[in-house]
Length: 399
Image (cartoon, rainbow, N blue to C red; front, top):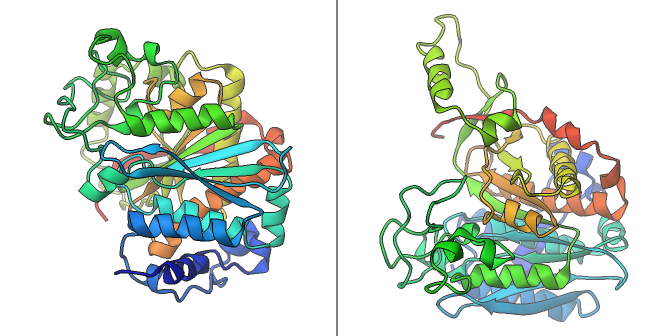
């Protein structure tokens, strides 16, 4: 599909056509429609890099008093990296969302663009949000990986992955493709102080600076904007909800591999009377758990998680869980938090429930719920311990 600039603007403009003032309750009503009927969402075509650029600059042209588009850097292959800001009052605090760090995780850019379009719509809810915060978005952090249809950026000089790398770390600090010359996993290089990253500590001469330009651009933007918080949007696979397990941070920080193996064996074979029911996970969220993250930053992050969880739980058929993340300091959720910013990981499940519209709406409403709660200060009234309500993410399940 090829869209002209005006066609593209019209298509994405339809994403955010809301009724009933855009309230969470209205969005949750299955009878409420988005008045879509647009070519873009009726297809399952990707929003390519040229179309994304046209949308951003088109919205800036049509909303000169609100919208600013900046090129914050270039990808490794030289593609522009864009941020877009919606600001009504210079005195408002700033909030930020980034998306598409992994090139093969589609629809994240679409959801942030839907939120952008809504914020400039003149809707009363949008006005209330912009009276309290300025919103900054990076819809696509990894344009090269998106074109290559791969998780990593594109870097023919990148090493092969460290076989010991995982969500808790890597001995060498190398998180990359399975073979040399593929690229880096951008979401492992979000350490604001590069000297603290394991890659630098192991190879200071080879990597005196962060080798991932996309990560450097986001870090520089965060430091320049100084937002109250950042939400990082990703896409995960398909899972079922585990309502039986409970979260214990000590189990995460100090996993007992033998004990976990015993627990798995206890679940098999299944009870003959178990009917095999289960809810499919719509998305998962998590806060920073690196031990060096300050308690105030962690609590703010938890307040954000619960705010989005509470809003999205209003949707019929939406099931959100806690993401089983690790402590590695280069992951955006931990890296930005270590620099003093509230930080949340949001993982939308891929094609598990509903259609393209349903999935885009999850990202859309998550951005708006967090921004709205910050704008009216209700975020500060949220008990951080409320995140204990989130169930665990269970077993993978092909849908």
